[in-house]
Length: 374
Ligand code: KG4
Ligand code: ZN
Image (cartoon, rainbow, N blue to C red; front, top):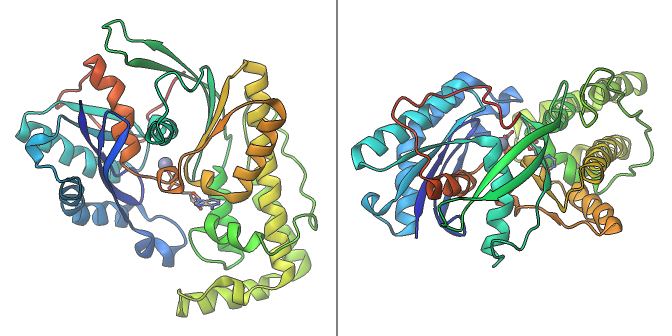
C-alpha cells in the first residue's frame, strides 16, 4: 500500500492531497485564489506566487490532518513540475523538495497534464473499477484555462511484476492560439460577466437560445490534423457585440459586479446576451467534441477521456455522452472537483512512477513549458 502526498501550485489553486494506491482519496484540499485575481479578470502571476507562499504550509498540513496521517506515514511526495506559471510552480516544488529531504521520503515530479489524465482513472478506481476495466488505447482531451490538448494514450505492464503500468503519451493535437477555457474567460470578461468565465457562461447558457448566432468553424491551415483554434470565435463575439450595441449593457454589468461581486450576473443580463452566450458555448463545445471524436475514430481508441476545468461544462458532458454513445465508445470524466486543478490527480499520476521506482533527486527543477509526450 502506498500513500502519496500530492502538491499542486501551477496556476491559481494551492492544493495538497493524500491518495492511497491511486484509488482512495484520503484528503483533497484546494485553496482557490479566485478572490485574489477576480478584480483583474485573470490570473496575475506575481500575486499567484505570493498567495501560494502564504498558503502552501497550512494547505499541506490540513491535507495530512484530514487524512489522519502524520508526515512520517507518507510514502512519497509528488509535486507538479510543470507546465504552469514558473513562480507559482517553484513554491510547490521547493516545499516538496524540502519535505522530501527532511522526511527522507522519495520525491516524484509530475507533469500537470498527466495529472489531468489520471484524474479520470482515479475517479473510475474510486468507484470500484479494476485495473483492466478501461480498455486502451484512449484518446484524452485535456481542456482548461491554460491548455487544450489531445493525447493518444497507451500503457504497458511494468516488467517488475508489480501489476502497475507505464503510460505512454502522444500529442495528436493542441490549440494553435487560445485555450478553450481562455476563450470562455475572455468572452465573459468582454461581456462584463465576471471571472472565471466558464461557470458563469455555463449557467447563463441554460437560459438562452443556442441557435441565434451562427459562428463559422475555424480552419487551421498549418497544423496537425487534430489541432484546435479558439481566438477566431472570441474575435467574432467582440465584433457581434460592436455591431449589435450589446457593449453598453456589458459595461453597466461590469460596473455593478465590481461594486457587488456577489450579485448573480443572470439578474443583469438580457435575453439577447444570454442567446449570444449560449450560441458561443454551443460552437466551442461542438468543435471540441467533433475534433476529439474524429481523432478517436481515426486512431482506433477504445475510450475517450475528458478532463480539465472546461470538462466541468454541462453542455460539453451532454454532447460528448451523446456523440460517443452513437459510436458505442465509452467516455469518462472526473467529478467536477477532480476536473479543475487539484492535488489528488498529481498523487494519482505519481503512483505508477512509485511502483516503477522512478524517483527524482533534489536537483529537480520547475519547467513552465514542460511537454507531455511527443
Ligand atoms: O483546470 P483548471 O482549474 O485550471 C487550468 O489548468 O487552467 O481550469 C480553469 C478553466 C477556466 O478557464 C474556467 O473558466 C474553466 O476552466 N471552467 C469552465 C467551467 N468551469 C471551469 N469552462 C466552461 N464551463 C464550466 N462549467
Ligand atoms: Zn489544469
